Image (cartoon, rainbow, N blue to C red):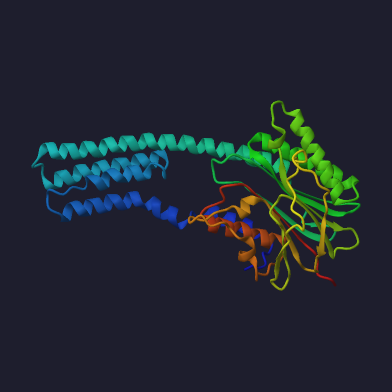
Length: 379
C-alpha cells in the first residue's frame, strides 16, 4: 500500500494532479450542456413533428450554470436558443403558438440559468474566502514540524472538513525536550474561532510544560489547569463545555525503544511495525478528557510499551475514526492499514488522508489532525 515518494510527498503529488486535471466526473459534467444541445437537435430531427427538443435545450443552460463562467453560460444559453429557432425554421411554422411557446420557454430558462450562475459564483467566492482565512489561521496555530527531530522522522497533517464546514479545534504539536521527544494530538470541543483560541491555549501550555515537567503525568496536570483557567476567563462559558480530548506521547532521551502514552478520552494511537504488523495502543485505564477534573478525579498514569526500530507511531483525531461512507460505516484505520508497509511518516499520512477521502466519497465531514513518528532502523 505504501511506496516511496521521491522529492515530493504523495500528498503534494495528489494536489498537483488535481490542480492540473479536473476529476473525470467533473469533466463529463462540463460536456453535458453541449451533449444536451446536440441530442435535442437530433431528437427533434428524427422524431415526428409533435415531439420537441425544448426540454433538452432548456436543460443545457441550467446544467451549465453551476459549472461554467458567466460568459460560457451565456454562450450555452445563446446556442440553445438559436438551435430552437433554427429547428422551428427548418420544420416550418405549422403551429405558430406552439413554436413561439417552445422558443420562449428556452429563452426564459436561459435567463434563469444566468441568474443562477451569478448566485453560484458569488457563493463560491465567499466559501473560498472563508476557507482561505480558516487555512491561514490553522497554519499559524499548527506550523509544520521539522522532518526529523532527535533522530526521529516526523510528519503531521491538518485536513480541513468539506467546504462550508466551520473550522475546528484539532491540534498537534511535537518538540524535543530535556526529557525526550514529546508530542500531543488533541481535539478541542466545538467549532469556530473559540475552538481555535482554545487550541492555541492548549498548545502553548503543552510547549511550556513539556520543557519543564519531568513526567507526562505532570504535563497533563499543567494542561488541565490551563484549560480550566481558559474556561474561567471566558464570561458565560460552562466549565463542563470546554474540554479537550488528547493523547500525550513521549520517547525518552537516550532510549528510543520506549514509548510512553497518556490518553485523555482520545482515539487510541496505532503502532505499525516494518513487517506490516499493527497494534492499537488503547489505554490501560480509561480517562475523561482534559478540562473535566471537576466531574471526576483520578491520578493520571502513562502506559509504557516497546517501540521497535523502524516502527511508525500514528496519532489522529476523531475526524479519522468518525469518517463515514455513504452506508454510514465508520472508517476503521486499523483494519485498513494492517498488513501495509510504508516508506516513512509522510507516506503513511498521505495514504491515510487519501483512503479517508475514498471512504467518504470526497472528504471528511470533520477536520482531521494526524501525526506520524518513525523510529530509525538501527545501524
